[in-house]
Amino acid sequence: MTLYQKKDKSYLSLFEELELYLNESKAYKDPSLNRESLALALGTNRQYLTQAIQEGCNMTFTEYINDFKLNYSRRLLSENINMPIDEIYINAGFNNKSTFYRLFKQKYDLTPKEFQKIAISQHSHPHKN
Image (cartoon, rainbow, N blue to C red):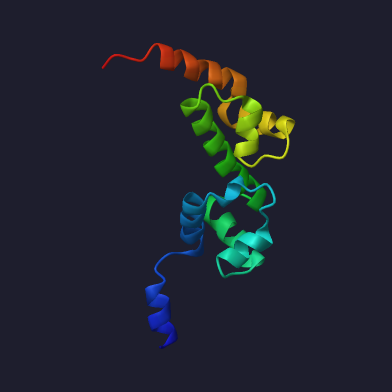
């Protein structure tokens, strides 16, 4: 197989591969996930991985993984309105509550508790279509 044929088969960029891998495996939920283990899982090295993230979404590795965790925690807060927030941040792969609260507020302009209250009120008063 020539290099061209091999390249032709891998139509996904490393960044697209990474997105697909994280969405399917939910590896971001593992608090011990790091550049090395993720690069290994994707068959690349940490430098290429970091570069792909930088080019793909202009974020650092940590910002990128935290973004997945935040999106996941937001989904948990919306769908599991009775789940305690302590359980949510641990399920999403955060190691500590204060980091979770700070990053959540930074991204969504609401604390997880405020977000959860809104989700609860929407569940008890669904919009009529």
